[in-house]
Image 1 (cartoon, one colour):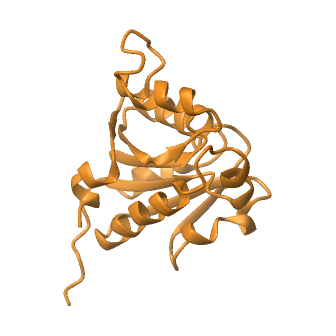
Image 2 (cartoon, rainbow, N blue to C red):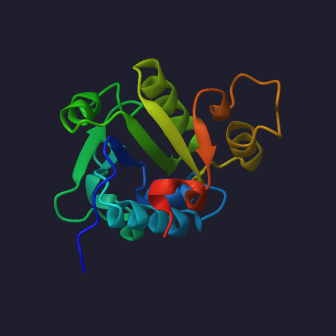
Image 3 (cartoon, one colour):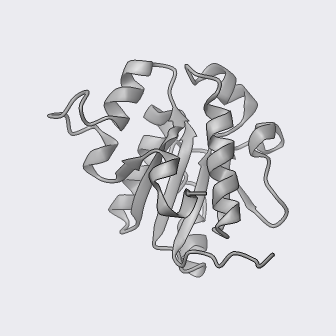
Length: 172
């Protein structure tokens, strides 16, 4: 079987996928299963994968999203994956101009990381079914334009927001 050719310029970010956060800051614990499927598809597509977790939690990465050999794990002290890590520099070094974002909580790390990335010139696709929040209404406002179409907080204002099976790199 041939090794898949990576999609140039795209990387997958798994944000705050540690057991404590998934168990306490998502309203649907099956989000880890959906995120694991998206992560598996990203690996199959040959995308670089970055795991970003809160400082002190790198040994608590959710077992369904455990890093594979060679995948980068960064620890952060901020909501955004960028503010307190060298993620931007690593993405630039890898020739990445677009990121696929999955994480918990949508109103925390996903929102902060997405807006920071867009502000620095990256293209962003939020993997909607691989994100969750403790408040299902907030999750919906951030991910579904039809819920609050006049709001400026929705991630759909600044990024593509799609389920994994609609993202070309993550299709089987």
